[in-house]
Image (cartoon, rainbow, N blue to C red; front, side, top):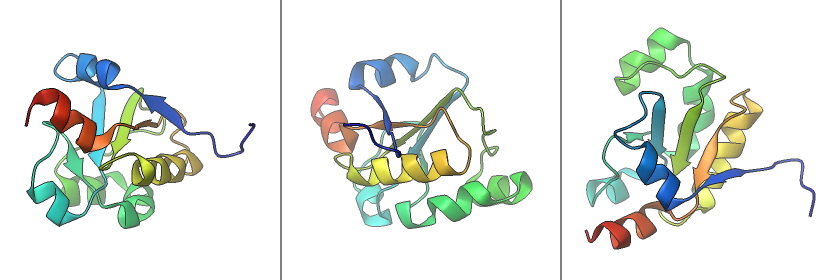
Length: 120
């Protein structure tokens, strides 16, 4: 089962533990604008999956101007991507990894699991 594109994952419980407790958490929602408009995980920033590679290749000033938060360094300890159910999040995580973000992780449960568990 060895794979060159290894996607690191994070569970609901671990993500929930980081939210509000970790100053280093950068949570990226890669769903479409329409999906995000229907609800999102608190504290997430919206970067659609098709723009992740471009976004994380931007210089820091451009990234901050576009997304309103500082661009994470390549060694950011808590960089988490998510989508609705995990597939696009995995794509985004792999793109970030290819750009040198070695700690990037995918929340595989996505917004679907989050909203069920949070009762929203």
